[in-house]
Length: 212
Image (cartoon, rainbow, N blue to C red; front, side, top):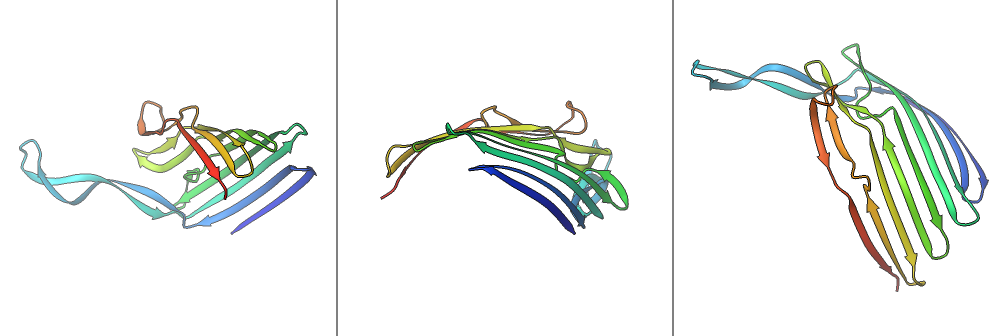
């Protein structure tokens, strides 16, 4: 089940304010369950103690009972007469997840707070943008081991782009991604209990477009 209510006000050319409230009731969402010290049929001889089952920790997907999602979104866009503009939006999401009749915390993969803000410029020849997209801390895996959840740290993704129209047929562009050199970092409740790390580095894209 889900429902949403939104309102928009266009107060000028290319300018608007918007707000929305949304609600979802999710049944049978997919999560992961960790089973510790499971005999999967592997036998080993450890330390000369003789053949014995080797026990493993097994993580497997299961269906949770239900999840409740309630959120609000606010946004705006406005362009000034000189070609500069601003676009921004903010989303707050409150979630509750239940597994085996127990409230286990947030719904996995959903951050409580997220926002996006961009400075814009456009005219007959130039089109430029500087944007920042923020995603707050969120639970990635509720049952990651030892009664701990795997949590992903906040990240801010900054991009910039500029395009120039040489004439009616040819235009060139330059785009930079992840300008803050952000990275993915996950832990088990404490920063010194690393659960995941991934880095992408900065990247740049130079392009040209020709129309015939």
